[in-house]
Image (cartoon, rainbow, N blue to C red; front, side, top):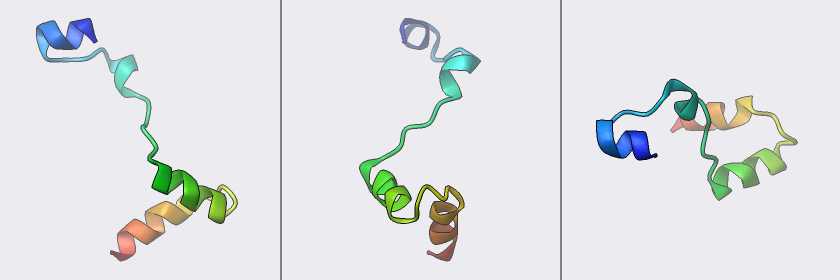
Length: 45
């Protein structure tokens, strides 16, 4: 984070993760962990 504050950029390895919102966790629980389902639902919007 310090690097980002100074340079405005983050190291590549720091950007590789994902933040998963509670809404997405709930959906994943509902569909048995099928990670393709959230993508399908977003595409339908």
